[in-house]
Image 1: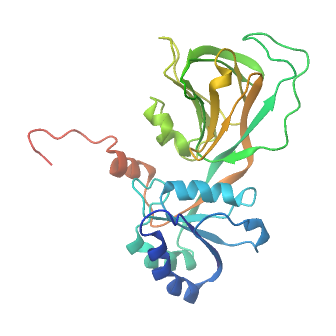
Image 2 (image 1 turned 90 degrees about the horizontal axis):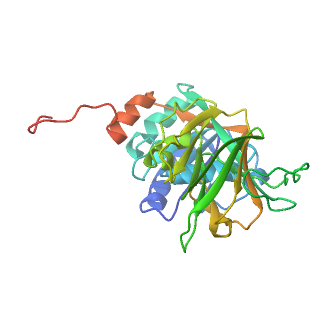
Image 3 (image 1 turned 120 degrees about the horizontal axis):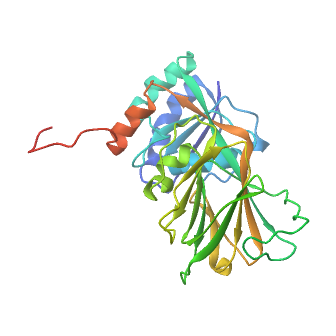
Length: 295
């Protein structure tokens, strides 16, 4: 088995855990690279069978983007906090890696997205349409969790218009909009009042951030559709945030497009734990409150 060893060296304990694990890993697999800064271009290396990622969920998000359009199944070792994606404890690594070597695991595949920021030939007011749209730029940002369109300091309200497959869907004013994958639905989307999606669905959830209206609610829509965000007032103070790790300032007249990526993220699951068990363990979802000190 050929593996990449990736991780977040800035997180306490990651470098030490990798150093402890490498002798064991090298006895049982061919380690193609050890990159704890997650800066290496993995396309320059031979393809691996597995990417072993040490850190938290943020390290896995970076690994997914680092692998770009040549995705490798990921096994995450959790040295972070919640660990929705990196759900293997360091003490379980030896046992779990042996199971992987012997084929006792499954791979789940998850939606990724492309985010494209393009200028429009002429800035449009909300609701206005031109006969010709700008050509989509070939440079797209690949992500796994979510795209957040948000106002930036000094904070001003944003006027947003959402289109789905070119059809106007909603206009509202607020702090921004989250377009989340199922994997990302337990992150910023959940905090903003959006629903939790089953992780292997092929759908996006669109959740407004502090909309100045009583009628706007999150929307779940097929990932086969293309989502376009246009801006009215406040566009010059807006930014786009990719997976909470990459931010880009917007200017007036720019358009944000989010669509399904041509690749999927692959996650190695071992030992078998259901998504609902993880929700119960990590977020206490679906568990009754305790009364008068009852466990």
